[in-house]
View: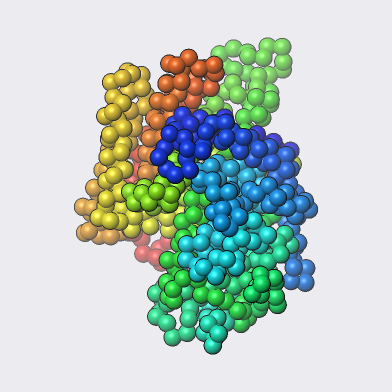
Length: 593
């Protein structure tokens, strides 16, 4: 059975030596002293390893069952959910007035990685609740906040997001679910939604569904979509639960992975709903939830890559297979361990350099969200908006690839269920699809985000890279050679791709759209190159100061050099693809495929 050890030391390094959170002027960050964050992370890591991770294989093998309209979660899930609730973990970063602890989002993100690594399917129940609560917090009336948020912050009630219908996924303007106005100000919601994660289960007293629907007589298409709060049980004025609402689970989807999460078909039969936000402005309200969810999904890509890497590393050190071509490393044994072989090293270094870089990228993104929300930093808000499709798309694509590489280290055993590696690959696969498939993320990046606010935010990103390189050039010849020069080269590739879009995309939009996926990956590599250079600076500073743990920092530098030398040059491949234009992609008639 696989194991999991929370990477708390690496998280502490990123928080305090790279991001220097406790020195930030973001409100609340002054509380993030190393001793405090260490205590929180160590406790979360203990729960992850001892409570959640042992249930991961249980959820995978047992799955969820539907009995007389009630979904039963896997054995042990309910007790673990009670333990998470009792510890206050679901409300770690939520407002104190609704029962949360008001910790910064960056700390919640680090904790969320550990929970997702140890048991992604389980963690989705509280993760979706967090997103639904955030949408109500941002767009709900005072009465709606008072009615729903205290119970949702504690996870006594959970939440969902209901977008997809069988005939429409990304193109939500095609939805058929209807909302009929009632005399008392409520609406009757009728329709069917599919792929609803955590849609029905036995771990909470109530489930608060956020449902997109069209009000009769409203505008056509996406402009006619509104968002509604539709509770499983209606809530009385005194806060007690009332009658069962007209919403029910019709089926549980049979899925490739995340078996421990109940992915439901939800039927709404004249269910009572309450408008959240403004009429016909449902997408604005839903995107409060979606953007948070997309960052969380990017984190899931990292989380599965991390646990897969940990187990591949253990196997590579333990499994004896073949001899080192330069001479036996285990002469008293029948063979050397797998880790002596260069190709196994390559695979492990791909995984390690991705996971550590992705963690820094995610926490940097979370710190920008804190800066935007806690101090009203519009520049941070614009930059993280630009980077959201990169975080979601690039990290989940790469995260999945890393679970496959980890599985490959095991050889045939990686394909056998008893070793557990296949679950990481299967669970990681959904992250490339839900909350907006990665192709849609790439289109969003190139089609909308690059031009947002007149291109202000992408230009700010390039200026950030340029300023970083200028400020740190010439101080250390090895740093210049190993980190700054590769970063500058990759950034120039990214700028060249953007210039190509500007010049050729105007002539033919397909020239830009055909290269959007490559651009998303190119952007992701540059972001990881940037954070690796920042981590290298922090590691060098620690070594120069005389750290008591030089091995950690020397390992960090070696891992960063690997990424810059072996992974970052992918930007040149992506640029060549982009500059080939739309013709290679669009030449064939549909009939000739």
